[in-house]
Image (cartoon, rainbow, N blue to C red; front, side, top):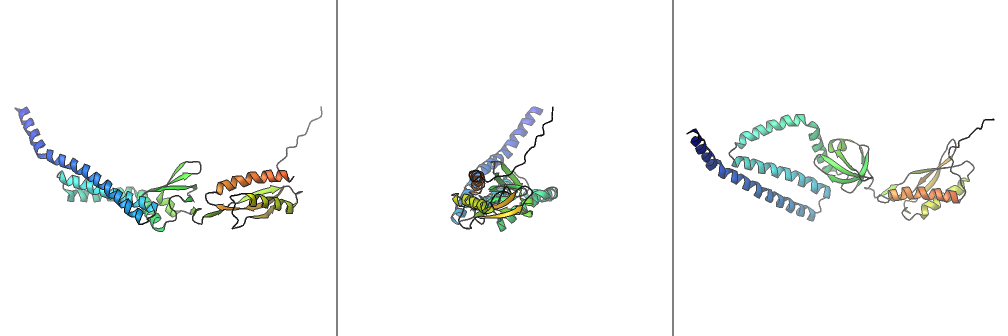
Length: 270
């Protein structure tokens, strides 16, 4: 008899809640499809309006979260959950979570500030928080960089927006700062001619601004020259490494010594 009662209650629950559950599943499937289409359409509109790529990804990410929350609330309402009470509980939980996750909120605020003031965009080479890399993606809470050794670097937006940011791409050109030392017996004028020829001969060194070669200091064991070629941001490392190699070869060919520590060996008499 008890089994029959349980079976009857089970049928009653299925009849009562079955349609709601099926409707909730249908709403989730259709809603997810609609959200996907809305995001795709929004992206097309922003692309036609020439929105910055960084801003596009940020807004689409934010819009996606908002639409998913609304979809979940709709499903809960369909299942018979009191959304007003749920919203109050959600607000109270949100306050408690917000206090516990102040860092995450700071990162969110930092992301908003980055989008508003745009200190950099996707594709820019920046240096921040002790890291150097190309901006790969700007998300709600973090910014992703691709390091020079192809590492993925993730920096929280809160610390990123509050710290110093060096953007090497904004101006389009970079100065390559190099220092080369020669021996005190070397002729300064000849050395400057050799170094200048190396700079002007390199195909990726810009003519404007013109490269410079100057005596930087008279060090303990060398005359140090400040060698300053300019390049595009993309060619920086090609110029850096190329000039370094070419200077060594040119100084050797000209018979100009690059000083280095010498080890003096004292032989003991037998």
